[in-house]
Length: 496
Image 1 (tube, rainbow, N blue to C red):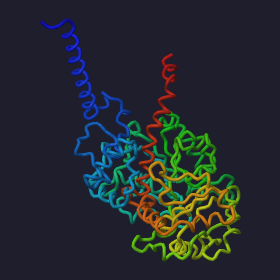
Image 2: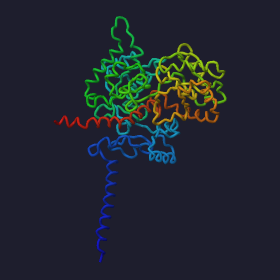
Image 3: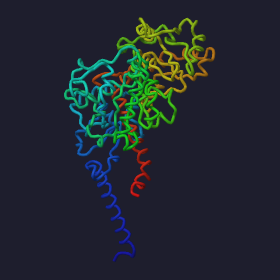
Image 4: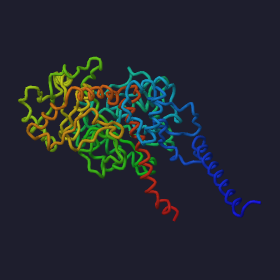
């Protein structure tokens, strides 16, 4: 005979164990095979699988999920360890061109089940985008043909190029639906806005400012202002905007003076910016917006041609505008501190004449390149230094850097507070104290991370375009969080 109370207690334990097992199996089954009718879409968002950001979509077979950037069993184990530690896949030091290339070779097609980010793009009239480049399509042709790069309208050169990411992102979305264009599968354009994670606004705002912000002839309102006004009217009338108040919209405004009028009315959207220098925090902030790299204007130095420590005779290099206002006044102070030092090149320079080539040669033969705050906290000088493999020295207390949530700039940059930089002898003593081995480590890291700051068409894995889409994808959960919080009482009010 069983002792009193033993059978019931064991029976309860057995029942609880079996129940827990069935619950876990059911949960795993739903995650892998569930569809949107059973599980809310938000459950599937941005799951890190083996160190790779992916979206789990309905009916995705296991063999469809690739493992980009992983090239060996040890790499996969390392990625799993980083995942458990809550690290992002880009934080691995070997996250570079070689591994990204291995992913590129595995991409044969891209559809909504594979893409990290689903993007709906408005079919705005060409006056907002490629029409600003002089492009005129055929009758009923909304966009240029992008399957042939030789037929794509070119973006203006010179300093216009440094803010051209509006152009590269638009091209990338167009090519995502174009057969035979090999590109990463980070973002794909969808035709139904209800399927989209974000809504992209294809307005070339930086080009509009650079080319059309001044009055011409008898104009009383510039073309740039007219386009901004038209854009505000268009967006605020769209159901997509009204649905969430524009919070899921993506607007590129990289030039600090672009969208000066419209930004106040469209501030709920996610902006793609160079920095926050001319924005109040209620309009632009790190919580919702994306900081992206300038397009460098100097030519990239091939790694094989990159001069090592002993073949860079210049210790410190700076060439650019010296007399700036606001936070850029420090440039003038540093100029008078450093201009007479024998191993320092600190000179005024512009893009005119042979200026770009002189800057490239100077950076390529210098150990350190100064990136000093100007009228705004950032400039393309930082990215010119990176592609020249000249260790950047960042003297800009309010600077925000692209992809800093996944890239540790301290591995290849030197940070100096502005208050310290203007102390006599401080900066040069600091830089001269960095020995060959320490500098070489930063130099090697620079050569590795250069691809992340390259804009090109078609885009490549881990290049600037791909990195931007990944950065946008990382913002999607916070956008949904904001929308869901604001919906707490809105729907209850609608029921009444």
